[in-house]
Image 1 (tube, rainbow, N blue to C red):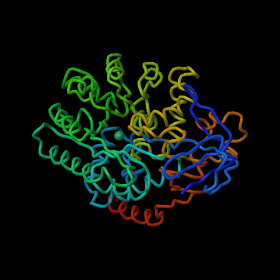
Image 2 (image 1 turned 180 degrees about the horizontal axis):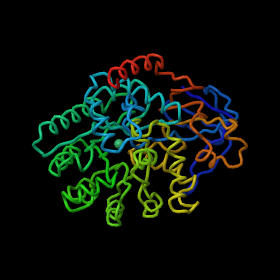
Image 3 (image 1 turned 90 degrees about the horizontal axis):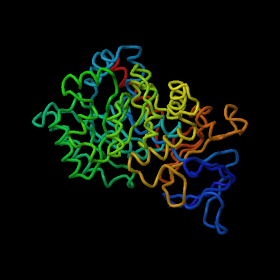
Image 4 (image 1 turned 180 degrees about the vertical axis):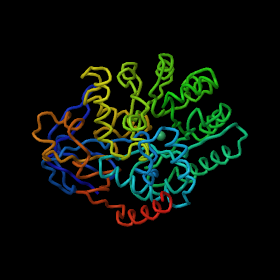
Length: 430
Ligand code: NI
């Protein structure tokens, strides 16, 4: 199947930033066949007029827990410990097999509608989250969350075994849209010898690492008391960062922590809205970028955001760093867009996504530039960071397939998802 979208504007990389080119974009199977000027012979292509639309790479949600849509708005305006230990974990204990399939489907539908084409997930039930990602057509890097009090902890061993079996079962499925990581949850839930065990397994499986680090002042304090170091130093001592690693949050890094990340090539998935909502602070992203660290962007779960809309996080990312530093140049619209696309692809190891060029995977979104909040077209790049809210996305394409068009999800039965999630939420949250 070959399709050409004509009369569109296209966001393409130029140097360190982007430019907008007018022209056409061609899709042949799973890939972009051309972008900009169309070849002379486009016979065999189905033609679609895209006047008034901007085509850009799909956003990459680089840290989330998609199934947590089930807990959306059930535990807000609470202190962190009350939120996690008093409200979220007791509800997670009530989840039954099958529940997180529907929670994940709801979250994927929300992401496809608001312009996300790939995500990095961490979850607690194996197979069903992966099944939802496979069924929906989206691209995903999946990781079962791991915790262990020691390398002999039975629960920790079981979780690692489940993660391993899941990876072996699924890694060749779903047209190659699914890849995997191992996810030692955080320094306060994983003992050093358990982390070392996870590292050994990751090497055997040839997968990278997804973790949470330096999210709150409390974590910094507790790790210092227990181990006499920072969370980053703690994980560095285990050898974790010798593997490709995506570390979520990273709100509080010392200069030495930043040196370690820069030397080891660790990617930081910043989560501005989640950090604000749980009152954990603001990550100094400008500083990380200046040190050459690959920063990407994630929403975190819907229990702490409370939505999976990457455009909202993109806007917060840019605005927060300007405000924090009293510097309007701190994180520009272009910086933000790069973080939400190119850098996400790099962090997740999705080498042929994140930017528009011939040969890359066709993971694309279309933005209606004639919406009143996007008009006039004085600076389209600015409008994506500062004016868009995600509702302007008219088409979402993943791996060459249209999964959402004009608000209609092609692979997800929204009514069924609402019915199932309402049933689950009734049982768990009341
Ligand atoms: Ni998280």
